[in-house]
Image (cartoon, rainbow, N blue to C red):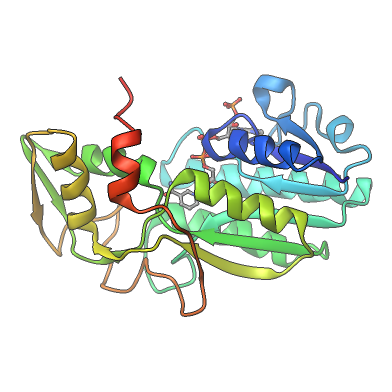
Length: 251
Ligand SMILES: NC(=O)c1ccc[n+]([C@@H]2O[C@H](COP(=O)([O-])OP(=O)(O)OC[C@H]3O[C@@H](n4cnc5c(N)ncnc54)[C@H](OP(=O)(O)O)[C@@H]3O)[C@@H](O)[C@H]2O)c1
């Protein structure tokens, strides 16, 4: 049984990771501002890490604005890695995104890349789990790409996956030895426009999704292969058509 501290352990992915590690018999501690642990201010961090073997970082920035998100991931990760060195943590696992290491100018990806580099340079054995887009963010992607009744999205390919499968991959990685960078992805590939179109259609959303290859994804253009995984990525099982009926949009 390992003591594993899950930073962001109250969030979408984090709460599922804590549940999976606990079910597997580990001591999994959810660490987040809501539980008295803040990686920006340092509050509660040293105490939480006392006796920890593994740290999983699935935290997220409260703001996605370019400078704020870069500031969040560099400050949070820097404080966390310093505290891990003090505590003698033997495996750092962080969740990041497929595509951060492909040519693109997405500000959020730049912040995740900076986080990854701090982890690689830390001297602490690490695993960086690069996941594709979560099915759960389908509605959010539609909303930020909507003008009037039209959703404009590029046809660049995505291979999205369920948050449950992301959490399973993160928990599995945390239970194993450090592996460096790995990629996980869903079982099907769509254009980004088609992914969102299928979701909105299933939900009876009246908006029209139009393919527009000049439209931005989170603030920047993407090309056909920016967001798809490398050959040899771990492929999860849940398909979009099986997930949709079980996951109505949040009220
Ligand atoms: N969206 C995608 O498609 C995608 C794809 C691949 C990877 N990812 C990555 O997945 C990760 C998890 O995302 P998510 O959607 O599960 O996030 P989320 O639901 O927004 O949860 C974020 C968590 O971070 C915690 N947190 C915020 N500020 C903190 C701080 N200063 N100190 C400690 N914890 C803090 C939050 O705690 P409070 O609630 O107490 O504030 C919460 O537990 C992110 O790193 C993201 O980059 C996302």
